[in-house]
Amino acid sequence: MSEPVTVTIRTAAKAVVLHAGQVLLQAANWEGQDCYFLPGGGQNPGEALADTARREVEEETGLTIQVEKLLWLREYIGANHDHADTEAGTHRIEAIFKCTPTSDPGRLGGHQADDLQTGLEWVPLDKVTTVNLLPHALRAPIAGLAIGDPDTPYLGDVA
View 1 (tube, rainbow, N blue to C red):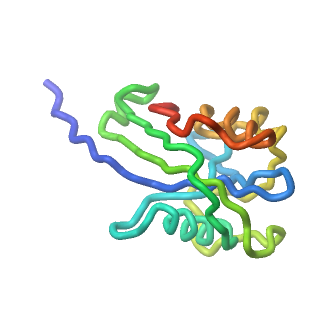
View 2: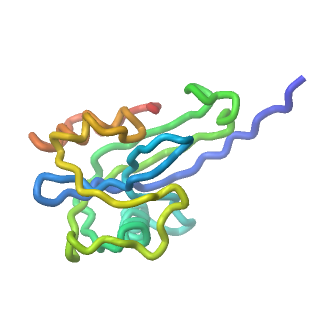
């Protein structure tokens, strides 16, 4: 008989940092694959989500940003996806914000990069659907920012 799984909910903020028709992505190597992630990370107790986005972007990329607006709310409930056997106790809630740099977008390099991070790249919005951005469910909505802000803020439980 297997042990019951204790589910922990983790809240996080991610940033869609836009500049000159491009989005800033973290290049990474995760589970042996080259991929990209949005900058961002876990919320600290007592920290507003917009402040989480600002702090995480500065740590990971070196940029200071202005948080413009909430674009999407995304959940990830591990028991519902491919790695259910190892992620049954995972439940993440991510607030994804539209942001613009307030420091020089050409000067990248944070002081506290994620362990998986291998670099930072400005990717043209029209190329986002062609890169291995994780989660894949974010590729089309991010690319769609080239034509306007989204109408549907809740993305649901997506991987």
